[in-house]
Image (cartoon, rainbow, N blue to C red; front, side):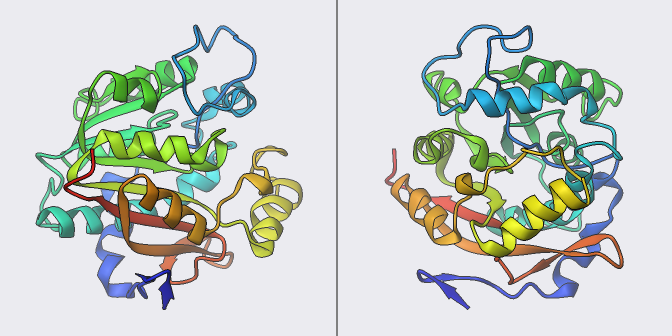
Length: 297
């Protein structure tokens, strides 16, 4: 299956299954949903320099920040999906950086930044896998909650959490082996500028991983109508269909930023088992794995 020359690989069950329910993915694991806030409230101190932030989106997540680690709360869908996303990330990073995916700490030696880290649901399992993790979020309340939760475990207490933006990190000259932005890009004001920042944070031949929701009618029916209004998994208004990107658009935006997308996979939910699995179906939720070209600044 091809998408603008990018192989949409059929994900074999046995390839990721050993990682799906590993302990390092538990402890209420899930990626972060974007971060953004409208009025300068107690949670969002001063403007953090020119950025792709969407103030209205920041406000949404600031309002429910205290529920990040409630596995039955507003972030429950991410808690349930997180093991599957982590399985993809673990396998892809180990393959790219020639690491042993079956070792206790397969990501040891890698510097990873989790952009839009929220309460730390992605940052923590990455740290447990051995990575040196930096979690950044524009909502101060999210960062405070992430720090408090991380400090409960010596393994995750090493995570560096910063209330800042990707653009600010670029200004500081930060560089990482891998840059993660899961469920974030659909909540920013300018996806193209956001991806430029992600690319700038990535070392040459480093990795950028972005996951989001496809702008398809199927996604509208499932991610918005069903998830927000029928099943009420998410607060109403969490997503705006017009802000979603198609896989083709994401690939093009990343390529223009200097990131070559090499692999893409979809996430499919099974209502019978209540679990997510990797698939070549990218019509709703999907994840893209790309590498930065050596000659890209």
